[in-house]
Length: 92
Image 1: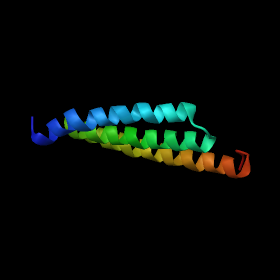
Image 2: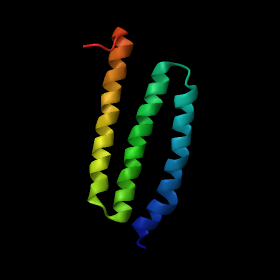
Image 3: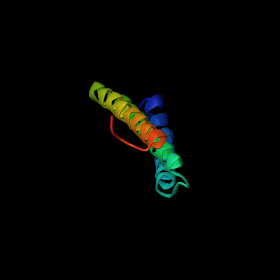
């Protein structure tokens, strides 16, 4: 294993795992709906970061495509929820 792979495996992945647990806790118990949405948003972006790290470790370009799709879904969630919080409706 190279130094980069060791660093990713033994430092980055455990730190990301701890952060996922904290994001989910805030998403579940957040004081307001805005805090919950923000925690879910950061969770999605962090998961896409995990996909990027794993794609580096296993040398798979397909995982990079999955990362891009997940980031776009998180962005769509932001727009959708922001519209709901602003207008109170989900129509047009």
